[in-house]
View 1 (cartoon, rainbow, N blue to C red):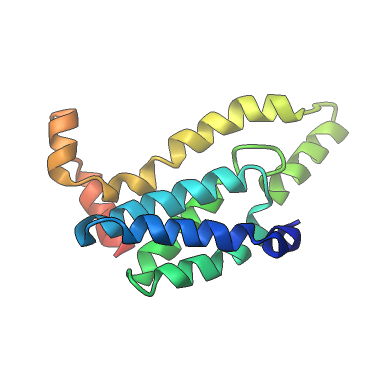
View 2: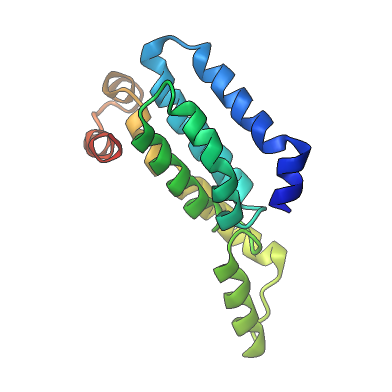
Length: 159
């Protein structure tokens, strides 16, 4: 499936669009926006495409962005996105399919819809965490009334 998407040019198109969006921003906003875009693109796509081939297909996109931005925060954004995204649906990760098969063999069938009802909210909540470094401390203070300590810690980890 990933080979078909590559041949259709979808992965390259996604990379080009992300690159254009990032280039259109002021330099100070490029990295935070790239972190958020890579994270959510990979999380949402990984919910419906197995995360291992999707990660492989996204490496050229990350390398293209690394021409203008630091590589490691982009790599971590991709890693977090595909990891958390794989939890969103039954087909998002191979482990989900295996677990559903084992559950069914033991008399506990898990349908796609049932898994989605639990997994997709988990995807939405967990995917929020890695983007916290992209929220400037003054914005988080204004929006929430307090400064996020985790914000600084995650920024340090992703830098």
